[in-house]
Amino acid sequence: MLFDSHTHFNNEDYTSLERQALFNTVDKAVKQGKMSGAVDIGFDLPSSEMAVEHARQWDWCYAAVGCHPHEAKTMDEDKLDRIRQLAAEEKVVAIGEIGLDFHYDLSDRDTQRYWFRRQIRLANELMMPITIHAREADQEVRDILVEEGAFSEERKEHFGHAGVLLHCFSGSAEFGLEYVKMGAFISVAGPVTYKNNRKTVTMVAAVPMGRLLIETDAPYLTPVPFRGKRNTPLFVEYTANKVAEIKGLLPKEVAALTRDNAKRFYGIPK
Ligand SMILES: [Zn+2]
Image 1 (cartoon, helix red, strand yellow):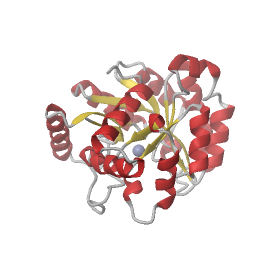
Image 2 (cartoon, rainbow, N blue to C red):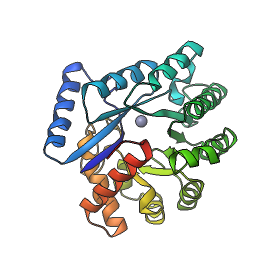
Image 3 (cartoon, protein in one colour):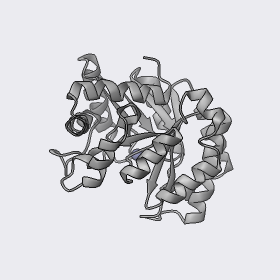
Image 4 (cartoon, rainbow, N blue to C red):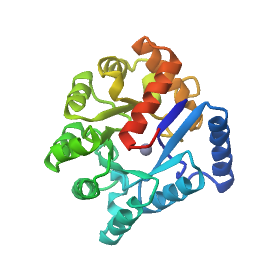
């Protein structure tokens, strides 16, 4: 029973027909007992609204609402208020994805920092889990999370962990372990299956199984052997297989453990 902890049914490149077909395939996999669910992750206000809508439509679908650093330049107070309202909806399980991306710099860095901080504060105010996107900004993301109280005792008491997830984590084993020690969860996607990605393989080997999640980030980051094609939540299986190989576990054990971890992180009932 695979659980895709981070996907984008809300991606604007899908036509509504393609999106419907995608939902039908995942729904079929759920009915066959192959998948147990997925979280549709918002990256701006419209995609967050859409994620909430999808979670209403499909019982196995959950939503996260928030603004990605790429779209930070589109944010304002009204939109933050709307994200706060959406976060109160029944199947909204996290604030995200939020963070910093200094690789593409699609929003200027101070704007990214400002809305990252504001959304961590929102997650603290609402006592909700946070899904983090960090690219070429690992140290600063960590520092801001610490400064804004994402690892507070209050959060740890509430969740039984910090309620912080590093999505598609590309940091070192040492950095991953530091996050785990702070109470965070680590998620890996398709890149762990890429040849020569020793860094992520070593990181997965080091991080305890109880803190590891798997995801697709579909339609991006397609795992081997489908690299180059459009990714779908079903391909989370290939990431599970790779994690199984690294951890010396059976694929079905990894599927069950990462599903349980995802549900624990997001606070989804079993
Ligand atoms: Zn994403």
